[in-house]
Image (cartoon, rainbow, N blue to C red):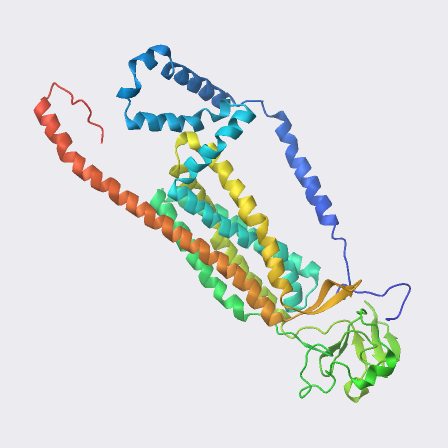
Length: 454
C-alpha cells in the first residue's frame, strides 16, 4: 500500500486518478438547453412549406378527379404514367397518418434505395461516421496510453486541434462547391480527392508512437533486465495481493512494478517540493542494486510525438470533412424533389444504425485484444492496466484505415456511375438533336413540332 499524506496522495499522472468527468456533460447540456430556446419561437408551419403543401393537394385532387379517371382508362395508360403514380406515394407521404405511413414505408424505402448514387453515398458516409465514432470515443484513451500523457492534456489537445480542423474542413468543402459551381460529377471528384488525401496522410500514423515500457512480471525480457521474472524469489516473503495496483518506477532501468510490494520495498520516504511532493520507496529487494523507486508509472521517452501525431490526425479529419457538403449535395441532387425529405431521413437512420451504434463496440473490442494485464474484480476481468502499445496502435489506426478505404471505394464507384450517366445523357442528346432539326424543317417556320423537348 502507498503512504497516506493527509489522506490519499494521488496526482493527475497516476493511473488511478479520476477527475471530474461529469463536469463536461453538465456544461454541454447547459449549452444545448440555451441553444434550444429560440426553437420555442418558431411557427407551427413555415409559410412557404404551407403554400407548397396546399398546391400539392390541389394537383392531387385534379389528377384523381372522376373525369380524369374516365378519360384515362387502364388500357390506355402508359408505363410512364404508372411509374408516376408509384412515385406519388412519397409525395403524399406527409398527408398520411402514422399507421398509414408505416404500411407504405417499406415500399418507399425500397424505392429510395434503388437510386445507386444515394446508396453509395450513404455507404461512404457510414464508413466516415464509423471512423468518427471510434475516434471520438477512444482517441483520448489512445493518446493517454500511447504517449503516457494525462487524460486532461489529451482532451485539451483534441479540443484545440482536431475539432477546429473538422469545422474548417466542412466550411472549405462548402466554399469549393459554391465557388467552383460544382455539378454532380465535380462533387464526386472532390469527395474522392479528399478521401484519397486523407488516406495518404493516415499512413505515417502507423509509425508514430511509443513502445510499451518494461513491466516486472508482465514483460518477459530477463536477459535485458534482471528483475522482470514472473514470480521472482525476492518478493516471496511479501505475500503481495494479486489485485493490488499502485505502480512504481525504477528511474535507473525504467522498469515498472505493479506495486511497491512487487518491487520488494519495505519503507518509503517523502521528499517535499514547492509545487508537489514525491514519494520514494526504499530497501527494495527486487530492484537492481537496491535503488529507490518512484511512486507512479514510468514516463514515456517519446511523449513529444503526441503533437505531430495529432496534427496528422487533424489534417486527415479536415480532408475527410471536406466531403461533407459535396456528398450531401449528391444525395439531394440524386433523388427526386418529392423524395428528398425522406431520403435525408433514411440517410440519418442508416448512419445511426450502421455507424454510430456498432462502431464504438468494434473499436472497444479491438482495443481489448491488445491488453496484456487485466485487473480482476470478483474473479472477473474489470479494467485493463497495461496494453501492448505497438499492437494497440496498429489495430486502432488499422480500423480507421479500413473505414477510410471503404469510403474511398464508395466514392470511386459514385464517380464512375456519375460519369456513365453523364456519358449516356450526352449520347441521347446527340442522337435526338438531328431528329429535332429535321422535324423543325418539315413543319415549317410557322408550325411547331408536336414535342421538341430533348
